[in-house]
Image (tube, rainbow, N blue to C red):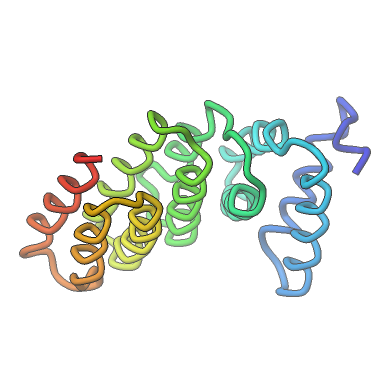
Length: 191
């Protein structure tokens, strides 16, 4: 892992590691992620996350990079780099790729868990907006992440938000979905 500190070799090495830890066979994923997370547990993951954002615009590495970002943020408490949230937004902007969108939703949830209160509002707003996404699985994923977010709030409103999120079929039609999304947005805006 000393290669991550080398100025010219760190990005190519990290790109290869990300491709191993973010895509491939199950055993390769587990082993690569375990090694990366073990290394990062002894150091701050913030510089690595900053470097990872530079890999997001590259088509081949976007999904594996998002997957690894999610794993890092879920496993190691750290302050996400300031450019992480906008970089993730750009990575899935106008995308029709389910894998990319699903990975972005998981990164948003992980960012929320590591962000301070002002940063959390932008993440929640994005996740609530994704409840209106045209792809049902993306709506369902956003709702699942928001249930986790609501569970972290620790007040009486979180029960209402969880009830609204779990009481709706996010895979179904859009007729009454707008009213449910508006109600969910109201619960989170009250925070």
